Image (cartoon, rainbow, N blue to C red):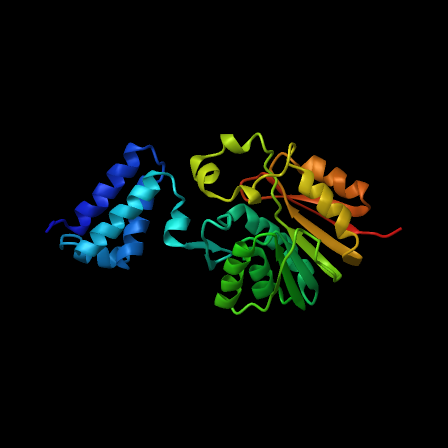
Length: 280
């Protein structure tokens, strides 16, 4: 029987993650210990010199080993916060990122009392957030992956958000018209994916990353087809890669959208492009 205190167990995890060069080794090792034991910081300081239970040691070491192999922390704990809400996540969906909060925050003033569609919903973080905070009339969410939709449904149930989910290749099975369409589509150029971090490249779903040769293929397709599913004066909102603003603005303008604007995220990078459909 192994005798090891919580303090030594935490240090062991930190050392392992530091040895493979993880920048947030101390934070990640603590969050995994917190996840395994249920202890917050205050309780940990009261119990840190006590012996850890064998089962806790085994589970913690397994998780540290997976994190050492660059498995994203959020997939190990199963949770990521977004817009102040906890969301279930797994390897069927992208980990929600703070960048995407800029998309939701930009759209919120436009969704009250409106019928909203979220394309490429993934974990459902966008659809759930606008439903919870935006007082929408109705919200539908679409994804190609049924497994992603299973996760999105669980997140909607968790936050009591009334959302209609549909498995569809973009607009393929969409028949209704909306006042607002939101999308965080795949926008990474295919030849850039292999240069991404191991956490992203090796574990997050490539179907949610690959935006074609130039990263713009989904923007072209969604913008063109959105015109059949937007009401007069309807709004289209995109999350974009930080170097794609000029191209996405041109795509939307070429397809008849007016008042097309770009908004930066909290890091000062171009992150959201949006505009209004004006029919001729």
